[in-house]
Length: 350
Ligand code: NAP
Ligand code: 3JN
Image 1 (cartoon, protein in one colour):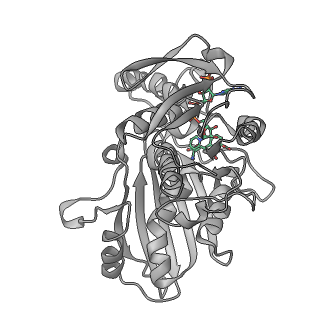
Image 2 (cartoon, rainbow, N blue to C red):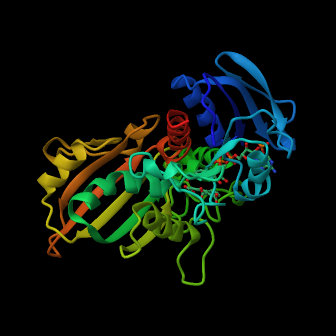
Image 3 (cartoon, rainbow, N blue to C red):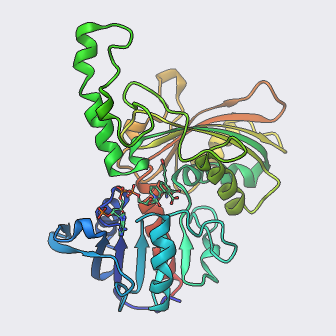
């Protein structure tokens, strides 16, 4: 349990990473009540310094003793580090908000999106899990529609930016994209294939390409990312009867994930009713003006906190169906911001 205080000692696990960087910026932006901040990463980062509120802090190597005196841990150093180190943090008295998949399906660990199931932060046992980025933006948009008309089935296709895979993958797209000059010069089939040595992190070239595989394949021929979306959505919406199928695709976009979502509802919802509901929903901004070519796009969502919804239209192939296009910054609402909102809820309830 978090004790009520004016200011809290906060540890950021994975501080040098893509999500870690956003943790630091958002803590500062939201004037989170930080007394002392501890920035933790691997041995590789020993000696580095990072800025928080214009002050320089040394990055420390993560260890079991890193959590003495820490009240809140914001973790984004991967699932194996969370499994290994968060129990030590809990033993030391900290409450942990974990961005990894390590504890998300554990029945004793709440999986929380503040716009959907804030009351689930109660009864935690020291760890609260933050869902996968694709799940978060989907449920922020779908929960208000589910409450109004009960979603029976959904088909989700994701278009996930490279930043979802971490810092090195952002650089990989940047490096591969630099070959664009070569394409313009020769303009031939195959001329935009990059040199093999530029393909290191993704299984294939990502620049000028799409990769319909995120994470490993499972026995059911879905990827782990696709099954995370299915299982986490059911856990957060507390409804195992919702039919959910997903296809997750990596696209050559730096920041913000996009999703095409088709839903079938028990009760009829017109597009106009859905727009009215979503326009009043927390964390959602409706951008839906086909006449003026206005719809959500990743470039517009980059650096923003909201979940943008547009292209809201009837699925004319079924009785009660809607199509939506949902875009959000995966490093912010999809990761660091959602975790910090959970920490803010913990403070409110302390
Ligand atoms: P990243 O840019 O590759 O950063 C990884 C971070 O983890 C770095 O700070 C790295 O430190 C640290 N780290 C790696 N191995 C470590 C070790 N052995 N001990 C201590 N620290 C270690 O990756 P990212 O995009 O920030 O993602 C990090 C994790 O956050 C992911 O693995 C995932 O679990 C979670 N995540 C969740 C979502 C979500 O959907 N909610 C989205 C993205 C990421 P060094 O710099 O020292 O190597
Ligand atoms: O690829 C993306 O767009 C999201 C990636 C999330 C991710 C990456 C590495 C490990 C996760 C996650 O949050 O599920 C994990 C993990 O914790 O398993």
